[in-house]
Amino acid sequence: QHVAISIDNLQLRKSLERRVAERTAALSDSNAELESFSYSVSHDLRAPLRSIEGFSSALLEDYHAHLDEQGPDYLRRVCGAAVRMSHLIDDLLGLSNVTRATLRYSEVNLSDLAREVIDTLQVAEPERRVKVSIAQDLQTRGDVGLLRIVLENLFSNAWKFTRKQSDARVEFDVQKANGEIVYYVKDNGAGFDMAYVDKLFGAFQRLHDAKEYEGTGIGLATVQRAIRRHGGRIWAEAAPGHGTTLYFTLGV
Figure 1 (cartoon, rainbow, N blue to C red):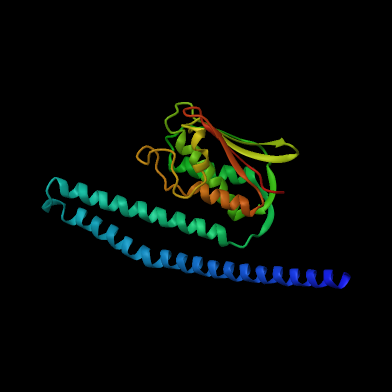
Figure 2 (tube, one colour):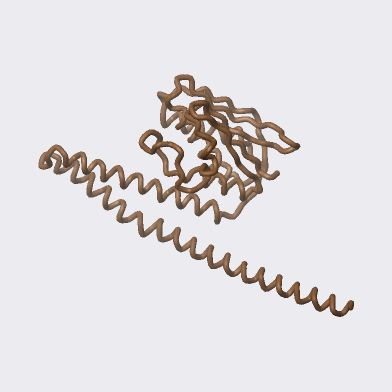
């Protein structure tokens, strides 16, 4: 009986080892395909986009007098579409890089990172008046590059969706829940219907009209992947017209 059990255990272990080897090979192939795709997107798609934008701008500038009333409008639309496509490529590459990047852990001051992100947003839109509250000395361990991407996306969203608020407010703080450290970014902006919360972190998913609020719909998918790579999770609470709060943990 003991011999039979040992044989069964040996067979089970070999079966598990074979499955692990197969999964590892499949993952390696998938990563290679992803890297090839990223290279192709970065090099093969950018060149024609630059040509489209460059020649359209040249036509608009050098041949404006030879065009009818609709011509300049058409060319501006072509340029705008090329720029949006370029932004989409950048975001897709960012999503891919977050998935493939090697994590380098160190001590990170999230408060300092948050202030740097807000300063950049303020410089880009100096006319905006947003009351920003950032808790002092929020320390953690993590990959500073990925954590910067997390905060850039979360604060950019809060900044964007409070654009129509005369008393725009953005808050970054931490709380403890069930012994877990939970960070959150809260705003009093457009919010959204929680009936669609399952779509929030999907790539290319948008809960607002692109004409009203710009974006590619990839930012929060990137944030979720960066947080998952830290062993954490992210979720949201919101209401239409009453802002959004995005909570996240970092598994430390």
